[in-house]
Amino acid sequence: MKKMSSLLALSLVTAILCGIWSFAAEAAGLPGWAGFAGCTAYFASGKHGAAGLKKAIPTNLTGVLCAVAIITLSDLAPALGSAGVWCALLTFVMCILAKYELFDYCPGTFIGCFSTFAAGGDWMVLAPVLVFGAFLAAACDYGGVRLYEAVTGNYKRNGGKIMTNEQLIAEAKKAREHAYTPYSHFQVGAALLTKDGRLYHGCNIENAAYGPTNCAERTAFFKAVYEGEREFEKIAIVGGPQGEEADVMCAPCGVCRQVMMEFCNPKTFQIVLADGKGKWIERTLEEMLPFGFGPDNLK
Ligand code: THU
Image 1 (spheres, rainbow, N blue to C red):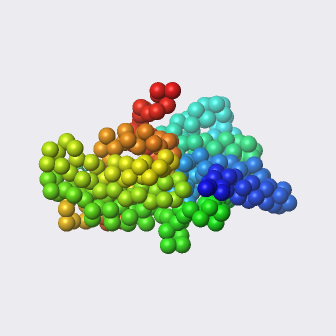
Image 2: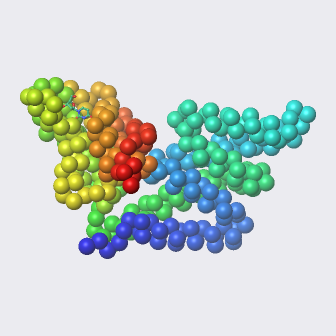
C-alpha cells in the first residue's frame, strides 16, 4: 500500500523551503515574491533538475534584459515612441527568440520581464533573486523525490542517485540487446519509467508477416500496463542497425505515440531520444504528438 503520494511529498518539502525563504527574504529586505516568480518559472517548465534550470534561468534573464531595454529606451528617447511602442517591439523580440532552443520557453521570458516592471526596474536585486528562485524550486523538486522515496520505499533512483536521463538511456541500450529483428536488422530498445519510479524495458519484436511487428516502446508499455501500471513519467528510446551503436536518434513511430497518448499526460510525459554517442534530446508527448486524440476526447 502506498504510504504517501509523490504530490504530497513535493507539497510538504515545497511548503517548508518556501516558508523559510519567505522569512529569510523579509529579514534580508529582499523581494520574496520574486523568488517565487523564479520558482514558478522552473516548475511551469515541466522539466526537472538541470533541464528545468536550463529552461527557467536563461529565459528569465532575457525577460529582465528586455524589460530594462523597454524602460531605458522609453526614458532615453521618448520622442521615438511611448513605452507602449518600445513594449510592442521588445515583446516581439521576446517571442521571436523562442526559435532558439535556449530561449524557447517563452513563459519564462515573460515572467522575467513583468517581474522587472513589478520591481520598479531594479534589476540588480531582481535578477539574482529570480535565479535563486529557480534553484529553490529545484531543491523543492529534489527534496520531494527524496522524501517520497524515504517514506514509500519506491525508488525514482538508481544506484543511490536520482535516475538521470543518461541512466535511463543506458537502460534503453540494455533493452536493445533483446531485440528480435531478423527482417529489418534494426534494433530498438526502450526504458519506461513510471511515476513511482519503477522501470520497464522493451525491445522491438518482428514477425515474418511484418505487420504484427511490435515496437520497443509498445513492448515496454504493454508489459507495464499488464503489471498494473497506469502512471508514467518518461521513456528513453535508442535504436539503430544491428551490431552497431545507434548513429542517430530514433523517434517513436506514430502508432507508439498514440499508445502513449492513452496512458500519459501529453503535457508532462517526457520522451528522451538518444543516439549511441551520448547525445540526447527530451520532448513532451504533446511536442511529439500535437493535438493528439486521447481518452479525454471521449468524455
Ligand atoms: N521500431 C521501433 O521499435 N520503434 C520505433 O520507434 C521505430 C521503429 C522498429 C520496428 C521495426 O522492428 C524496426 O524498428 C524497423 O522499422
